Length: 504
Image 1 (spheres, helix red, strand yellow):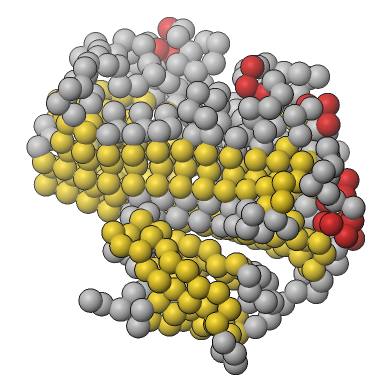
Image 2 (cartoon, helix red, strand yellow):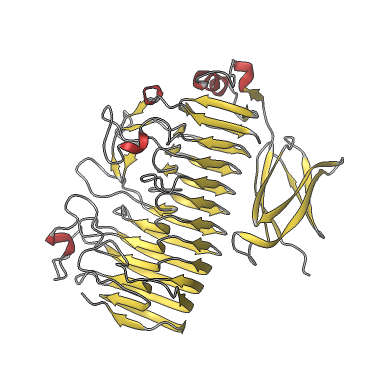
């Protein structure tokens, strides 16, 4: 047996996150591995086992040289320096308190640069807290930071900063929103880590009863919202039960999210798992997501008179993730007016989602999607493994002739462009509708599509159903690659997939 390949993904003052044999597995290993961390100049610090490819070790001391040992493999690493460690209990936080937001905020505000705020084991009810630059928020094993149920305890964030920059969005448009349980605005060098739980309280109060409306002029809260942040690390945590999107970074750069467990009730509205919007240089590694909507959705705003994000989402890698039960596993759009490009998805396991890789847009969006690569992944019981749809019937005019017409219309700034998509070394088991569907605009065909080593088997008991959210689509069952206004550049080693045009 070969020696395990260990990689340090990140190390904070008191935690570190690793991958082991990431190139040879998806999200999980066939067999658990025992590991041990010890100080180079001392004995063992902590030990355990992992069946996951990506795992987080806590209980470390800052500014110490450590060694991780797994089987015959070892990796030396150093934890970061720490200027101070502040425990929220020293600021009057209590598990008995109805709302610990002020106590936690006092600890954050007091913390010097380079310090850590610790939330220890226990149940800590809280309203939204606001982080700052150059800090670590440590939510320890056994700790649960849980949102209060009273919506009136949530501050409301404006759509824009005082200088006119967009602060927050709702479905790609600048809008006023309730603050999130954990909120960070214009922060740098931020670490949010631990083995604890962050509970957004979506099932408490009335959040899920007004999914497309407002209250007090504001849209629903997320659970973790980052706006205009740079150099952010999120590791180890369980984040669940969100009022709406669970983790929403907007206008952020250099973001690492690793070893997160993100979950929501399957019937909860718009509780997407992880939605980077107009962000760049993103790494999502070893996430486990099972939610009420899309698991991972990459977005870049949509055209609106209210103002839209004007930055693309670009240079994102998604690897060793497990995505279950959502509407889509990895989704691009439908908010993509700023452009989404250079996205690499590899060694992922999609399980029981409605769609696997999904790209959705419509006339009126403009923008482009390009440089999308899905490789070395497995889809299990996914109804439509690959779906690219230029007729997505979102918004009030979604079923209008303008959006749904199959006649060519003049090309303009409102015409979306989709191209340069490759699917390589992907195995699909239990598909229902088709191996893949592509519905391109007659005036802007989907182009440069490549499949190589694509193997699909179908669920024998599948019934015909419409594979995408668009008008004029025929129900499908056990179809091959269905295409309308689509240009393929490479189709090699497809098993047992056939290619045929869509039928109205």
